[in-house]
Image 1 (cartoon, rainbow, N blue to C red):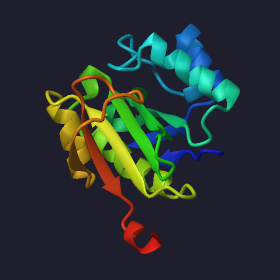
Image 2 (cartoon, one colour):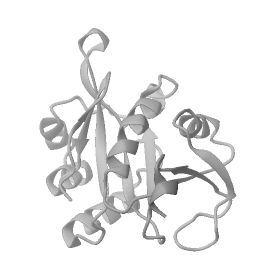
Image 3 (cartoon, helix red, strand yellow):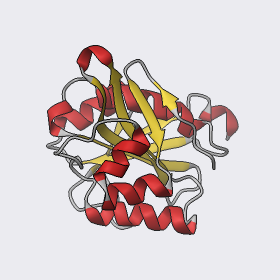
Length: 186
């Protein structure tokens, strides 16, 4: 898969290459150069920990998941101070071949500004454009009200507790979004 750069109303969603992922791990100055954006000292956002970044690098190096793509979210607004990295998010294959997972995270100082809602709104059509994808699933913790609102604003509905195993964390809840025409292709 050759992921596309996505322009939203306020964001530039830049697909993560191996160089970008390695720069994120090793050299913030290089990351800033590759993204043409300021990288706040508070980077990375919640949930994008070292273990997750290492897994992303492994997946890209090994082409372990042909549906995996993550984007770096750069706010591109001269009135707000220019280009700055505010978050990241993307998709990966789920155990069900017709489903992909979506995940995202925004730096604390950029939360509650609609960036995640905006980015997810543009990632959803990219996910549904992949061959065979009928459903997008997200998991979150019940106490992450902001994350739940992002999903609900983008049409996701609650699917209850996340199923045990297959990478689901204990205590998470699941949300799903069916492709609008999915019922026609069954």
